[in-house]
Length: 319
Image 1 (cartoon, helix red, strand yellow):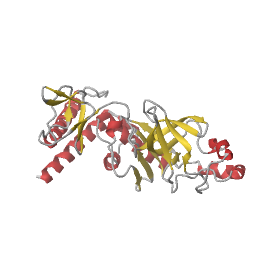
Image 2 (cartoon, rainbow, N blue to C red; image 1 turned 90 degrees about the horizontal axis):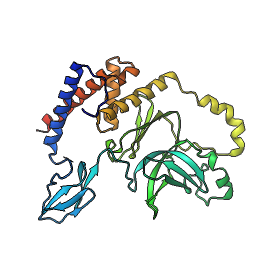
Image 3 (spheres, helix red, strand yellow; image 1 turned 90 degrees about the vertical axis):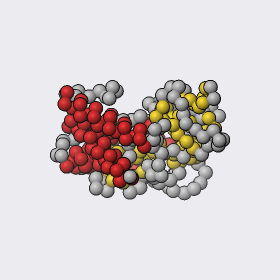
Image 4 (cartoon, one colour; image 1 turned 30 degrees about the vertical axis):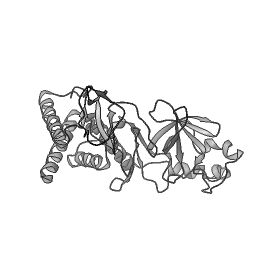
């Protein structure tokens, strides 16, 4: 609660503190060694071989943490995932980024990493959909696909020898994102899962949970790679595109409600997933809370109490 910057009155402060303490006790019972601080001992089975990963070291015959974070185990590898750190890419991660430069045969994207990521022209799904070699004309028309400040969804392909990240966007689900909001939260709040693309049908919203902490909330589109198919048709279609650029008021309100739900969960330090985001947005609707009031102190307290109650019920059912 020390990190929360909310103007709470005395009653709200007590209610929030109780809810967070309850959540902490429930998480501690579920996994006592989940969170560690520097010099905490990490329980391991010394009879089985294990590998020391990042954030761990041997000290007097015990495995201890060298950073504050969450203990993760992948097969025999034991490591500590640091909290509130910059994003550390892994191959296969779904990321959302912003184009910062259009260079020769490549785009450079900001993805909340220590270096800009690179999206090669050869790693792009071309507008015509045909698998072919990239020509000099394709290179000249790169700005017709992405230009500076465009928001793009892609996948981590591999790493260069200098540590920079190479992206790819060879599927229709990747590409330029429009008519929505880009939110930036702490990357550790977005867990790796089988599905990072979500269509919230009841709101008509597309939600993309980037592993790098970049969250996209936007109007639903059937195909993401509706890029420019024919350069010659641009002038003829300009009027139609202006009409299509209009987003109805109800849709804009839905986008703002979902975006504010993400902001509230991020402020409280809760893991951000589609189900919890929907529950938070529906809670605000059921209580007739205006969109701008969702960012107020009272709604933060209500969400924390609701989450504590939900996890308590889940724990009782498991018993």
